Length: 94
Image (tube, rainbow, N blue to C red; front, side, top):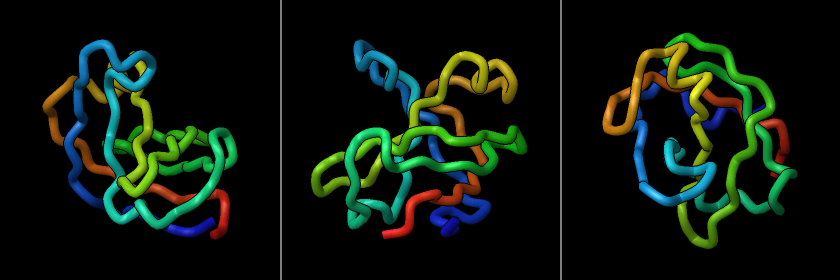
């Protein structure tokens, strides 16, 4: 695994009507990572809450995003607009 975010404070974004991606985190410095949907997975922590095997959404020429579901939001007690501390490892090497 390759560390792509190390103990960084990032914004938990809210975008109404964005489906499963309504609550998400934009992962800085990931625009260069290539891969198809379902092949890019990340693990790590969000505010100390352990995540494992979450999809990193491919986005053309943009930083990738990860969806933050209700279970995670409830566990960290955060919502849209809040800052979270993130450490992420990419499962797929590029």
